[in-house]
Image (cartoon, rainbow, N blue to C red; front, side, top):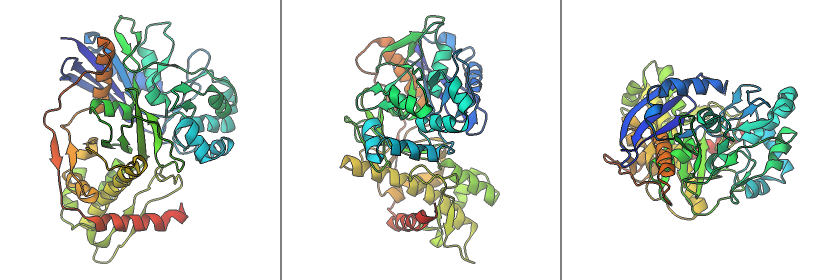
Length: 461
């Protein structure tokens, strides 16, 4: 039995899975936490990987790393970080994104070149922020990696040239996604000088080897990893509910949305991964649980005690600013509060706001592709909540598929590792037993109230 390792270096932790390369059975898994915050010393990720993989790595014949997208890992000439990595959810670079869009000729031109309209999350905007606010650090920067690239380099044998894949590179703002190549001139324009970028390794190819001789696959971004782990097919829409909320779909052709709502990324298998991403997702529920003095399990119980529509209580959940829609300075807004409002109403309104935010993503992807979504799988920690399982299909007005619990980003990385190890033209086909289908009576009025509030608060952001 060939054994491979998949790694998910996420915002919150490193998760590793050891997998049977033939059928995808997870043999063992472990995790180690990351420091909190929107800027983190990237060396903490290496320590977390070493902790999580201890005693497991040597059992694997091949390894791949999927990681949080967009994070800026700026390195000096010796390969050491010049500052803490700015993560995807750090919004200080919002005005830098606006400047870069203008320099490229506007949103449509930006989307046409890179596949996406620049926002604070995109790596290039973080490079520009560093140029303008930390010129000494910018001047010392000799190369720029993404989080998954940095961890892959940690695994690679000495002398291996840093590498990445199109899936993660497509979220930098200096990669021509439709053409599958770097635009080093855009990176230089953002940072103020030329900078070294990792080589781009193709789907299923061997990127290098570890010091012990194990195969290293290219790795990818976390969302492309999840799509690979769930065997997402063209037209399916994957909903992922974690620190961020993500709606993504597989497309055979590149996407360039001039509004910036849909980001036109590449996937890990040679296609494209149009995506809508929100900053606020599971935190909507976490905050509500804190405010009501309960844990997330009791929050779900409370929510299911209130009727659809939460007796008129509606939430616009942009607590940390928002990326989709692009409102970096927005705040959370509640409406419909009355003397009769109950704790159950407040709990349900939080779940409904999360569900409506995800529904926005599904609708936006369908509108751009010109067809209705196919399967709608649902993954992420918050998806275990019985309240979300009941409320989401009602808000969407369609069935939702719930795969069995699993680390699908790490599993996708493992599938990529198995692909590289095999040398085959396509990734291995792994079964998924235990799939549930969630259905509920549609509640269109809930989404209508949410959309009305979304429009009303737009001038405030």
